[in-house]
Image 1: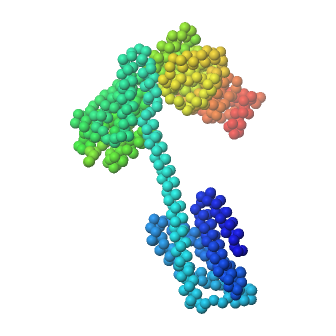
Image 2: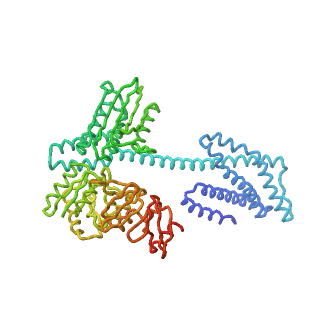
Length: 368
Length: 245
């Protein structure tokens, strides 16, 4: 009965530990519970036996518990080393089981040394079965309980791994969602839209028809931007139509400061290209060329077939690339998309000469 | 009330002009299409109020404000399409800002604020100071070049010389005349690079080549250009301390 308080306190700890939600601590508590029960059962069994004093079963179980705990601690220390095999249970169990012979020898040696020692201290002798029998008997027990505990440990470690992977996955999803959001934001370009709205609000007072047309263009453009996520490819014809919407709005804003030249090979019009690929390039031409220059700026858009490849170039006067310039969000997005869609076969290059800047996209034919 | 409008987009200028022009007490004295034009017009016409678009070629609206003289600057209302981070730095008591697209009510509210502050030199000074903090205005200086204005690199300036209501800005190539006080110019260019050598002159510290002692604790300063200036004993200690002598 002397062990009863241990059980209660262990249960008490169990509750507070569950709140901590650390699977390792839960494992520790189960370990303590297990040994408490083992001790209790042993004491109860021997109570009827008048030859055995009360402390003897406690010593037997205690010595087993001490050696087993050492091995348990060793196993926990090596947890990381075996974690990689958690998704291959047989292999995991096999690697652990290879320690069994050493475990049996040290376990039997350990517990019997302790028991003999303690009995010797009380000037008595510890009597037990002959050694060969002991090794078979204890060895069988060790294999059984090791199997049980490896099962429990496997459960706990797998759970921990699953939790970690889940957390990782959630973080990954969050990062991905953020990236998508920032891409969407980049597409919606607040500066452009607010400025366009202001232009419409100004035009309304002088030319209602024109303001109305501009509003419709802006709506079309917004719709085209939002459709981007639905489809990956579109025809060059469609993409150029979107560019024209954008240009019409920009020409309202910067009427006399920009002139556009289109040089499109009609044979190229039906070629498939990634949707909204050219838009950021044309925006850059406006942003760096038109919006930052005082004088008039020329922008040229050309599309040609060269062998199998479609070459689209957008160039602007009025700006040059600063030495050591870096790709902005727009260009980086374009490049990444091209890499994914064309498997590294497409190219996007920026070149600069005193006359201005050219963005050139080379797209191989997509084999579908 | 004399008002200047600066925006690089003509519809945006028209919109401001239309509504401001309806006000009986407002006279739109200039419509500028870029930052340099705006700065030149402010210098020449000295308007009471400037509606400055932030996104402009040449010099953006914030940079225009940063190049103005604190005490004589017009009241500023920034106009912008986007809630720029920089704009939030301004104290609303000093500067109002309109977010595009704005309606007539919002514009009229900005006028109420402007009229309230018309007599306040504090608002003007604090607007210019904040604009200087938000731009790298200590690196570049706007100077008159014939009829126009241009930006020069402040490292190219050798020294500054106060002369009545003007400051002469000496560079290796030529001398520019600015209608500003030396004090204000020094506060824009930053005390890092420039130091006073006497009451009416300041030097670019990196343009000094050597010192020669004179009587009574005064010194002569030899410049990299070969020019010789006088360092009065009043400013000697401060200058030597900064040069680590």
